[in-house]
Amino acid sequence: MMKFFCKCCQTEHPYSGFVYKLTNKLNSKWYIGSHSGCIDDGYLGSGIALRRAINKYGTKVFEREILFYSYSNQEYLLNIEEIILIKLKAREDPRSYNLKNKGIGQDPEIARRLNLGKKIPRHIVEKQRKALIESEKVKGSNNPRSQKVVRLDTEEVFEYGRLAAGAINGTEVGISEACHKGYTHRGIFWMFYDEWLELGRPLENPRYSESGKSKWRIVRLSDGQVFENASIAAREYNLSPSHLSESCNNINHSCGGHHWMKYNEWKKQGEPLKILSDFRSNNKYGYVIDMLSGTKYKSSIECSKETKISDVTICKHINNLIKNRRFISETEWIRIGLPILDQYFLTHQPREVINVETGKIFKSIKEAARSIKGSTPGLHTALKHKRKYKGVKFNYK
Image: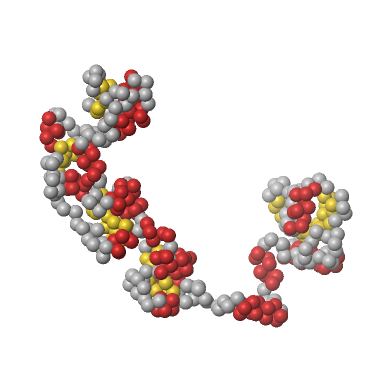
């Protein structure tokens, strides 16, 4: 006789599974089930009504009786379970936890094989078809897998979504979302072809224009390139999104060597372009020195283009308004002895502060704040706005 290895008790059994009957000792309700495995592995059943009863009463009130041992495959075991269920009319019996007279179980492959070749009754097919017609849904409606889609930037038409996804290394789901909700997929706008023709071949999906996401778009004024939001543009230039957003609010400020503007405002003003000039008309700082590398730039604008740092921030460095200064005017750089900084200095070196009234020098803002029993943030704010703190005037050395 063939033996089956049990993973539960690590031994071999002559049976492959069994059919069992569970009885609730409190109300005498019962359940018929089958299981491929060992009788000692703790399995009770997977029926919905049974699981609710177990959660309510616990496992101790149920008594199990083995009705049949199987020495064959699982499909044979399920057939035996179904015969017993039909014989006992389990589904119709109010004392039964079984909700159907079927032994299909939880294995989808077994269920598929058991139902293979079985025809759906005609009245069910007619009911489904009638519901489909009443819902005004047609096969393939609003489904990019079965209708044409168009790529809006090139106006290339694809017979269905899978071809479009393969052309851009995307996904069918992404194409579907782009058509339905107006999102971009792989940075490209998409529409259903029939809808695109009906709306007059628009350059972008109208659903996107009407959504709240469109208000975050910004434009690089050097060449008119549009970015979905400041974060995407900032990643390309290794910039701070907040600094980039500030430059969008003021066209005279630049960031990363470019001027920026909000897309909606840019459209209202007729899509203007503004290329960053090489020099400022009032370049009062002369040459700018990057003390981290010793590189000399003709202006803060040129420095901004090379380092991808806002020229406004560079000017703050030059005016000694930044804690760890990296940029300095050539005149001051020569005066203090041509220093070259390392990365450790920029990230760890504290900044010295001087008490203007007494002339005492402190190694850090924290030490200076303690001398007048103040807080570090409070003194930092006072230094930033060049005002007194607790009646005492401090300056960076």
